[in-house]
Length: 355
Image (tube, rainbow, N blue to C red; front, side, top):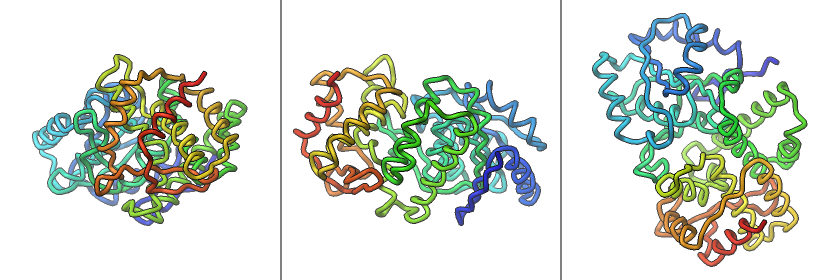
């Protein structure tokens, strides 16, 4: 299937095999002094060799440890030092080949090294393809607090090749689906209906719905690149989702993947939407049933819920000491900057925990 490129105004998103030709043409035109490829231990093993077979230029490969726990300033310091040791200059290019951790951190490292060098994203996970690598958000965690340090800065080019998805562990693939479900809930009831029937789709269908998901995110970012208003809707499920993810990273042996935490956050947000915006109850039940088909139901003690609620104060959407949520009036009709009382959050967790 040949998917049409997307011109964002700042950079172009290319798809599949066609994208490698455009990438090569772009590199030739720019005449970079040095090209660096950043990967983690997983993508180095599974994806970098495949990428280099289609990339006819000399590169230096830089590798970091895989996992959210390594997405921090210590790793950035190591990367900045490595680039310096390898004599990177302002005419160098960093190509990020990996999932959301690699594209987030690589984009931040490139944006700040020598006040900014060019970078290109080659996302290899579903999460990175439909969400993390699009829209210019780069950054790292501060301790266990998600994405507290970063800048908004676009790549020079983005190449999405769904063939890399074959290298993903099942749970990592599932994690990316959460963002696609989210895109339907905030922008398109038709897309939500399509996602509900995911198990009936073929591989070709999957490529098409990934493309649709990219288009949905791009359209939101295009209208509000700096997150002054509309772009906040992309945080649906993330206010509590990020707090849950951070809590589990710090206190649980099994760390929840981003999509697993966001899926919980979306069920909680659907309940809150019913309470505060009269979102239909049957749709709350539909969202819960659909997401629990894909994501295992977690157990949270009262103490854990209290600790998660405490983490909400660090959410990036907060202002003037208030915690703001994105909620739904209807599927495809989100509202942002909604304040939620703590007692309602407790009720939402009780609803989520019902078997």
